[in-house]
Length: 186
Image 1 (tube, rainbow, N blue to C red):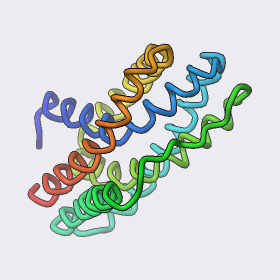
Image 2 (tube, rainbow, N blue to C red):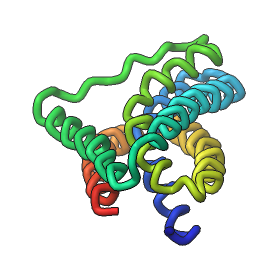
Image 3 (cartoon, rainbow, N blue to C red):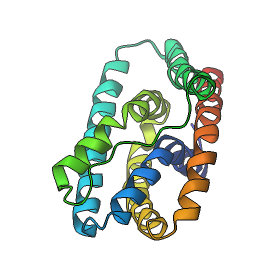
């Protein structure tokens, strides 16, 4: 079993890798002057749905023999490879984000719909860290607030948004591939 410090580090890494695209969305919401309380509530609600789906998937993995759990590493590995291939196939496109009067539920649905990669990564990650799932979930709850703060800060800095957008598309697939390889080797 991994040490809590290692689990915390892995939790921060998986959260950052799966939510780098959320920084762009949050920044756009803040830049369009959607009220902060709506953005934060929507982000937490959408992320809660992602966590619940991931926990449901985790429950399904309990029926899988332990030696097969490593095979779940194929999910983030394949997601990373797919995203890496897509980088070369299409030109950069901006996400379509509701403007102005976005409500809590619309922000939550954008977060949830943007979270399919999260579920694919979180299920195997939760599975190999079942003993410390409370630490993973607690760190994720804190990180959602931190992500909202970063999004608000970036929402006022257009140059930084462009840089994060450029670098994020390259880093996310590479981190997914590394995470998949880590789970396969576990």
